[in-house]
Length: 559
Image 1: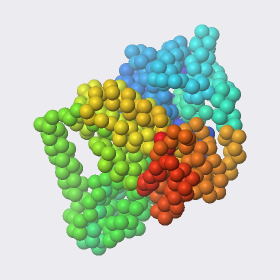
Image 2: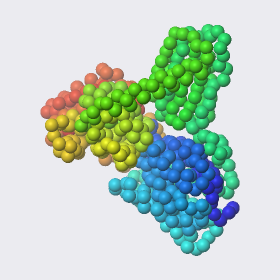
Image 3: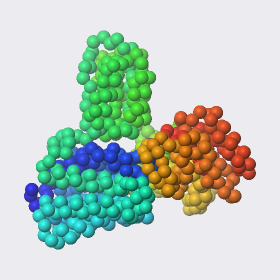
Image 4: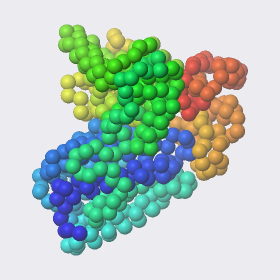
């Protein structure tokens, strides 16, 4: 193993690290403290790294280009708190190496230090016992080893070993980790990336599915076209086209499963994946079955069904692409002539009912996402671009999306973007209701923030594993109610757990109780719960809405 790293070695190491992170994402997800069915740290970090890897693979083979690709790719693709922090670590690291032709241990130590400084600055209230603690420990050890003038191999070995020790100590710094019996999931993700990168430096193969020539490789990054397209007569009558906007991991296995399913219901199949979307074209007698399959991987757009025959799939796809390009150009031209309005609103939401509520309240753009899939910084930037307003309010409606929203706001150059740190949909809804177009921007910000701070909220779901939180024992399958400050109630009955959660949120100042029921709850059951709450709290106004959200049976609030 050489004592310096050139551009090619860095490229190999980065891709190997990203692959190792991807290989271990399910394990990292399982380390989330709350045993809810939406563990996402591993997924968020992997999707962040996939975005960076696509740019690294396409970058020219020089240190400057690769370093910038690592930084910009991860920055735009960052998802969730863990992904944003990881992108900031890469941003700081890249700044220190981008002007060098080769890097040695002293350069790496300097870069680690810059990485930690950059990441800590990006987090408003850094918390120890997290990925930041692990990164800081790594940087400290790196400086110690560099000053000892170690070889690169010994340097990497010692730094990684120390990183593991710091990771093991995270439960001692965060009691909630100790009670749950896990280490910090973000820190684990960082270590998996570094271990993969070290293996890449030493020549070990870490499930790298392409060389480093710039061909896209990671799951979801490679474009492939289905075979068997024919201009012969077609026995399936509906030409079905749509785009899957991926919300689930999509690698070679998932791609083959999708193609096999499409082949079982039709022919003339085209399945093209690029970045976070999959284009589908299939001739079938059952378009609905194709849509349902697509929905298992993400949400759908550009859906089109025609009862017609086509001569060749390339003609259809090229025509569709020309049509889409023309539509986008028309939208751009329309925006050029339309004056910007004073205020615009972007909100993150999942569930038909919640999206309808936000639309009725005046949301200009709703980003599909939430606990189960955190939108990326780039998703936020795309939304900002599409809202024609001078001042744009973003409501993340999830604690794990706020950092990505802040990062997007900092990258937006021509619009004033204000991120309201809403932790859930009830806060976002109440904040939008509180907006008053006759008030100044600053007064609206203050008014909405006051409204957000006066809301107590919670959500009800089920446990996916045995654990202990806040002194309460949880078994897999238990119904759990989670409030603003942690676990509130555990039980076997959804309504009972939800009622206990609401009971803990209501105080003598509460005037309104809002209940949003999810896609798995029947309307009659939701109304029975609302009546029970109204009887228990006769001095409050109990409002019930269909939220349609997945995973969470109920989302509730009191204000």
